[in-house]
Image 1 (cartoon, rainbow, N blue to C red):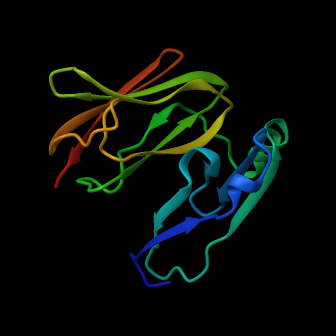
Image 2 (cartoon, helix red, strand yellow):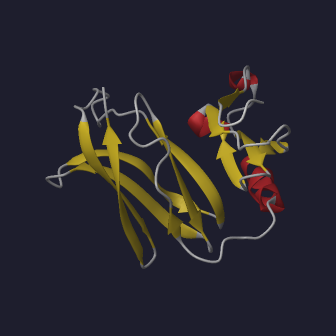
Length: 168
């Protein structure tokens, strides 16, 4: 791997698995879990001096995958909504977040006027680290204009907003 290079991991043939199965990629370096049924890919940027990166893939029924998601050492201690990366972005960006206990998680994109753009996540999730991607589209699947947008995460009493910048 070249230092500071963008690396994308994709899995093919997921559509051949039963619909009640999930495919989870565990990045042991960044301690992130990615559900390939939801995202379809995982992109990260290599660190200086990084030549090897360790992953674990868990495939099976939803319940099995959820219990094996705990393989990442050090469960989160707090709710966290990290700054998206890359920022500014085009055409898509990844948003990492952490939840220390099972919670109803809602992540929504708004424009600067507070107008609803898109709901990224609105579901019950188990404790862990997650990544969600936004491709710069709205609820009508139309590309939104360049500009500053707000990402709001609500989980239990946690409520946090981050700014993201879309450039074209």
